[in-house]
Length: 236
Image (cartoon, rainbow, N blue to C red; front, side, top):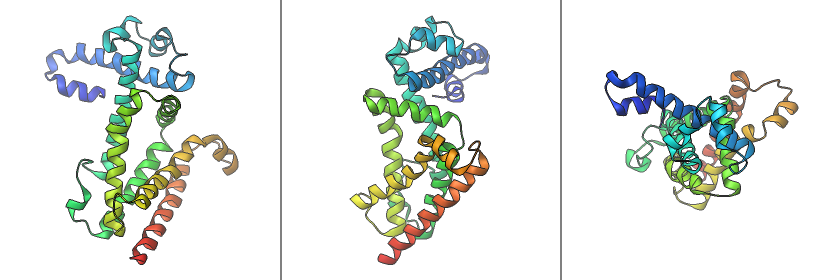
């Protein structure tokens, strides 16, 4: 839950100043925990270090989350909500079954292209994406309930939705092995530019990966997607 979601759910402006301050502390703790859990690992990160990073009282962790494990779950929920929001801007309602929308192949392909461009804009250009990826990679190393939260909350529904768009664009069945691998490949090529950020910068001679560099990455990813979609349509 983001700060805006919290304020929306709690309602009237009369108590918003006090509630808003509490939610800002809560979000600061989550963001600090995502950074530190990703950088050091869960076991090596103390609640004292998280509180110091967030500039919060150490007791606020127990107050908001019940303890360190609860904070880890909150981090996963925060990440799932953020990625869902980003994906939703490109794809719309993620719970909608693309097959029921009766999209023309061209519109389905256009939505896949928008998804690629949005993912690049978030994953490649936004600094917080690095912290999120580090957190997820740490959790994947020793899977916990946090990965279930992220998988069930965003990875699986977004992947399933993209598979549905792929079927509408190409005629390949959404749940075929080929389609599911194709979507993983589509997303994976972009994630590499975050995971392999340092070697990419060195090989490309980029001092940083900002909007211009992200635009260059998006152009190639977009061309790759269009080429494979065209090849699959010709096959059918």
